[in-house]
Amino acid sequence: MPKPSLIEENPVLSINVKLWKFLSVILKHNWHVYVFVAPVCLMNVLQFVYLYRVSDDLAPFILNMFFASAIFDALLRTCLVIYNRNKFEAFMLELAKMYQEIEESNDAFAKGILKEVVTATRRISIFNLTASFCDIVGALLYPLFSENRVHPFGVAVPSVNMTQTPVYEIFYILQLPTPVILTAMYMPFVNLFGAFAMFGKATLTILQHNLKQICKDNEKSEHQMYEDLIACILYYKRIARYVKDFNSLVTYIVSVEFLLFNCILCSLLFCMNIIKSATQIVSVIMYIFTMLYVLFTYYWYANELLVESLKVSESVFSMQWYNADKRFKSTVLIFGALTQKPLRLMVGNVYPMTLETFQSLLNASYSYFSVLRGVYN
Image (tube, rainbow, N blue to C red; front, side, top):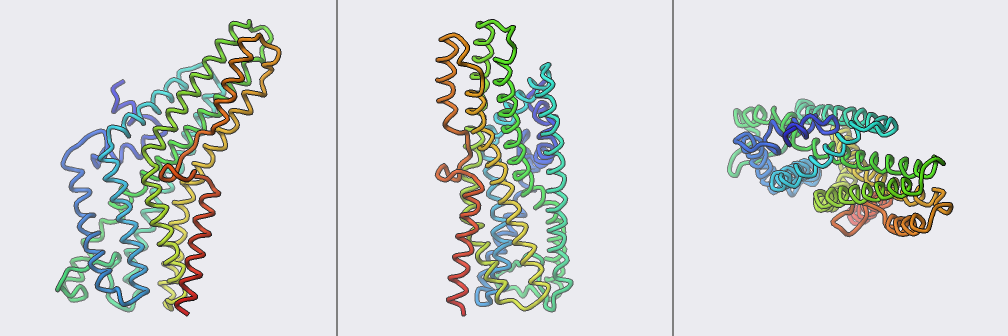
């Protein structure tokens, strides 16, 4: 099967890959990608112009800073994927090949794990895309309940009154396609991050199962047991390359988001203390939960991958290797030492992506918020 078809038809990837392919982010390159990215770039520039214009009014500045930063982050992700499209495609091709090998095997346990991954990734992708679309539709409806004339995404053109008819109406209509565009730009990366991590976790679970089966059958010869162990070691090395490539694709993107969202979360918490409008309060709460959900998705799946990696070492030494011959024992000890170093994703290749790091991010945001509130009061 050709490379594009193998990636596109893979059930773990298909929903998000087909969306990105239609927009020419990966698998093909044509004018669609410029039509997709250019209007969002222009809107983001106009958002920062608007931020400069309302910099004296703290609440609107913070609320619109959230949208401007989120759209900038979506643009950054998309541009990095386009720039590294060959690496992303090569990585997804490796995932698709590993998936196909498991699917074509006679291992019922591995097929069962694979089926669970497919169900989970498709369910999460559909939920995230739908929730993101509805979230942005809610932002589009916000101006209808506002006392003043405001755009869903605050934009400004120098020397132009944005609240005057027909300028206000024109820019409002121009923003109507944003739920589709921003959802297609923002959520596939989140979904694929989860899919990559879940598949990595699944392969580690399958490896643990295979390790436990090596010494389980007493009728196996010493030679056969050794061959099975070597096969597991080679499979582990393949998974290690998979996680290393996965990390190289996402580590700097998540590090930017780590810093960016830390500041935004702190600002939104501070904004809750200075706004009076019930509509704005509901909006801020929705924005905070949206951001926390995206961040938690990253760190939860990365943490699950790390935990599953640590279990491999336990599986190695839980075998009855002490009853085998000397060659088998020495290989087990070397393999066990190798698995002591867990496979993990990193934030900027500095901090491990774990729930502990996520908690540290929340603690830091709350600390900065407390300082800001104290200074403001």
